[in-house]
Image 1 (tube, rainbow, N blue to C red):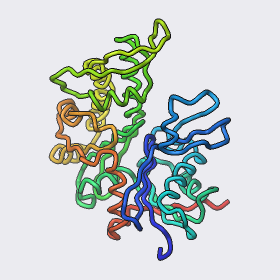
Image 2: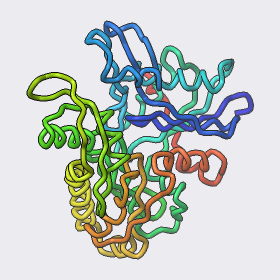
Image 3: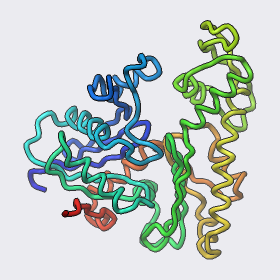
Image 4: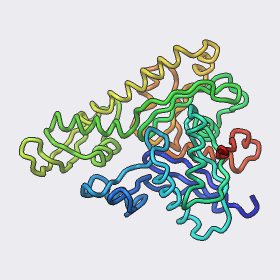
Length: 338
C-alpha cells in the first residue's frame, strides 16, 4: 500500500461519506446523480440534490442506492468517483477501499462493490468489505471480541438495520425498509390530511429536523410553501409540531416493535447481556429529538445514542484503517473469474 491511497467508504442512500487516510479527514456529499435522457450526467452530489424535486420530467435526479444497497452500479460509481476526484484530483495508482455494507449481503451483492470500484472511471482498486454493525460497534467502543451480546440499531435514510454482535461477529441481523425517507413521506401525507397542502420530501425533512420532537411539551410552528390540494395553486401555510410529531411517531413505533420482536427471538443469555449494556443506536435519522428515550420506554431496554449520528459508520472504518488489530473484520473481495 506504499503508493496506493486508502479510503473508507459509506455509501448511504442519502449521503456518501469517504474517509481519506492520506488526508485524515472525512468528506461527505449528497448521494445524488442527475441524468438527462437516461444517459447524460448533468450533476452529481450536492449540485444534483439542488435539482431534486425541481427538475423537469426529462431529467432524473435520484440516489444510486436503495434500502442501504446498490441499486445502480454505474451511478454509484459516478457518485464515488466524483467525490474521490475532489479529494485527490490526480491519482496514478489504484487505491485500497474499505466499504461499509449491510451484514446480510449475499456474495453476489458483495461482488457488486468490487465491480463498482473497478468499472469504468475507477480502476485497479483493492476492495475490502466491512459489515456496518461491526463498524458502528468499533466507533461506539463496544468490545467486539469480548461482548457476549450487544445490539446495534442503525436508522438510516431508507432502511433500519438491527443486529446482534457476540463473540467477535454478527450472529443475527435484519434490515427493515424503513428510515428517514419513509418518515418524510409520512409527514407529507399528514400535512396533506391536516392542512390540505402538498409539500415535497425536502420540505418535510426540514420540518422533521426543525420542529420534530418525540415527547414534545411545547407546540412549535413553521411556515412552508406548498400546493393547495383544492385549488392547485401555491399557498403558504403554518405547520404545527403536533402535525409533524403525529407523523413521526408511527414509523418510530414500528421500529420499536421490530426491535422488541427481535429481542424476543434472541437467546436468553444474549438478551440478558443486551439488557445490561443497553441498545446502541446510530444513523442519520437519529437526530429526531428524544428518539432514544422513546425507544427505551417502548422496548424496556436502555438505549445508548451515538453522538456521531450519521458519521458513526465511517468513523468506525476510520479507526479500523488506522488500527492493524482491527483489520480482521475487513474481508477482501475479488471478482469471480469466469
